[in-house]
Structures are given as structure tokens and as C-alpha cells.
Image (cartoon, rainbow, N blue to C red; front, side, top):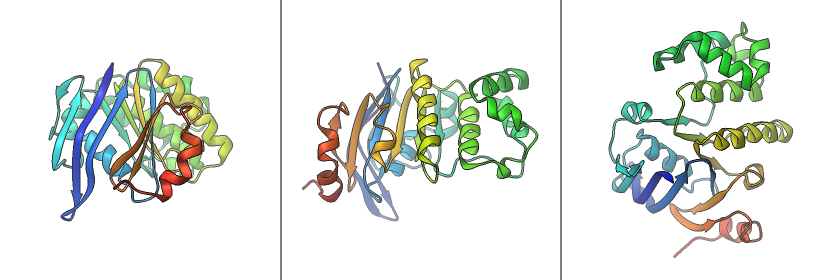
Length: 234
């Protein structure tokens, strides 16, 4: 089932169109990778899906229902969770206090911490530390733990691998694959395809605001990536 669907979505920044009719889906239980070079419109696509950037055309469907133009808080309550590039944790708060802020979702502190520490044991060992003192990988784990506290139906991840060592990235993507296996629709933006293709069920390549390729990652995508990144649809 496609939990999230973008149909012919257009979007602009300062009057300049950056998305030119994007069609994209994210299905329950699957990891969908959105790839493409810098400036392709990948982050804008995620922001439109989360309701934090307006679409100038097209439709955003959530669970088959039109959610175009919906307030981002309403989308969050409906199960859409965006983890932005840069992780979005509060560096001056402890790990435990970062998690405490998620009790506004209706779950208790104990429930949130139990789930977070079970998935990411390292967070339990540094629960009293300020988030700003954690490694990049630990901060990304904290961001994921915060995002999962809402029991999302759709998890939107922007550049999960940014600034992290390959071994750390591989471990994080193992967790992402496990999250999808639990029934969450995961849509992840990555500039570096190799980081995500090992766990992706579906992939799309965005070039200059248009989907230039879509399909299963094993359908010849790796061989085409260089041409797709350097070329553009006409």
C-alpha cells in the first residue's frame, strides 16, 4: 500500500520553480530512496511531503486522501515525521531531555526511553550527556529515536549519511531497514547512492526537479547513475 503519494507536484523557491511535476510513492514496509545530485530538488520534495514547504501544483496524498496544503502539525499527527538534514536535535539538552520533549505525543517518558534505549543501547549509556557532545552517529541515532517516538506511518529522512563514517552509515541503515520491516513507509533522500541502495526496495533519481528514473535498485540503476547525475531530462 502506498502510504504517501506525490502526483505531479510542483514547487518553487523565490518564484523559481524547482520541482517540475514530481511523481513519487512510499509504501508501507519499504525503503524508498530518492537520489540525485546537489540542487536536484530532493530536500524540497521531502519538505513538500511533510507540509513545511508549499506545493504550487499537483497533489500530496496520505493514505489515499488528499493532504495537499495541510498544516505540518496536522500531517505530523497523521503520522508523517521528517528528520531534516543536520539531525534536528537540541545540542544544549541532554539525551534524556531531548527524548522527554516527545512526551507531547501522548506517550510516557518511560515508554519513549524504553523504546529508544532498546533500539539504540548507546543512548542509554550517554543519557545524561548533552546532545551536542555526542558523535555525529550518536546524534543521528537520537534524531531517529525522537522521530520514532511518534509511531510514524511515514518516516522522511534527509541525508542520513551526511558527515558520517561509512561503517556508522551502514549500521544506521540497518536500523532504517528494520524500521521499514515494522510497517513504516520510509522515504530517504541521499546524494550518495551507495549508502542506501543496499537496503532500498525502490529508488527514484531526481534531476533538475524531474524524476529521471524509477524502479527497483537492481534494475540496472547502478550502471546508469553517472549518466543520470550528469545529464538532465528534456
